[in-house]
Amino acid sequence: MKSVCVGDNVIDYYVNSGKMFPGGNSLNVAVHLARLGCDSAYLGNIGDDDMAKVILRALRDNGVDCRQCQFIENGTTKHCNYEVIDGERTFINVELGDNWSGPMVLNEERLAYLNQADVVISNCNAKMSEEMKKISRLDAIYVYDFGEKEKYHADEYLSMVCDRLDLAMFSLPPADERTLVSFARKIMNSGCVNVLITMGTHGQYLINKKNVVHGEADRIDAVDTMGAGDAFLAAFICRLKELGWQKGEILEKDRVTEALKCAGRYAGENCLREGGFGEEV
Image (cartoon, rainbow, N blue to C red; front, side):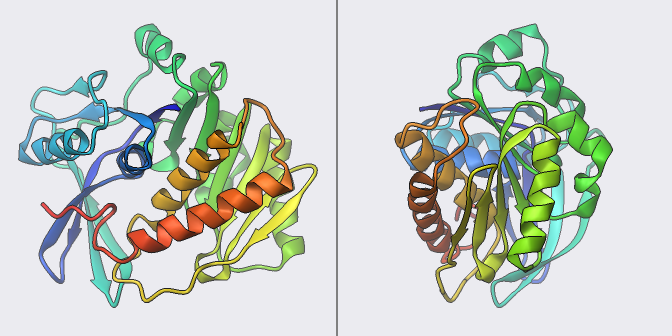
């Protein structure tokens, strides 16, 4: 499977321990897909400060193709600051630096490159919502992570990113099945085929027009939950593609059940190490 993750790269800084890790949703997913044996690429803007060198080293060390990235002269790398206690993180703030390398614009050359992929993945933290309609027109399976913030559930935002969207992922508080199905219908009415909802220790749901599939969460003593959703999404995509997932497909229950189990195991293993994928700066 050829996958391209489009969007963000950051340095995650744990203020209470002084530890730093390369991260960002797109970068994390790209690394996990590579570790799962996929032909994985990352496409985004990269600065040229010292932290950008850390980002590049992490990509190259994990076998992620980053040759199509745009390198921004004098560009700074975003820092996300957290406090992490007993494996759980609390977001503090973001520092962009003097000249944040920022979101990428998808020109014709980059779109031609993306059209060679089997799967294209992006997310709300990429800050590229206005570029997503370009991706939706490609032949590749299109996946988007909406994260956990309610502002990304607004109708205007959904209209920008949900057109021909094959899989939307949301991190939500625990809720009953009826509430989750109602939420998923809103997303599907915006143009999405399959909706994946993760709720931490309360498990996951995959909802589409045919099926409502619940997955149980594995119980573990987490060292760090940073990047757990990214690890889950990568493993979920990888297993579904191994099982024959196609563009525009309404996923069937048996394949979803298998993919949820694989993703849960993989994400649980990732929580046993610090950082988005376990590599400290």
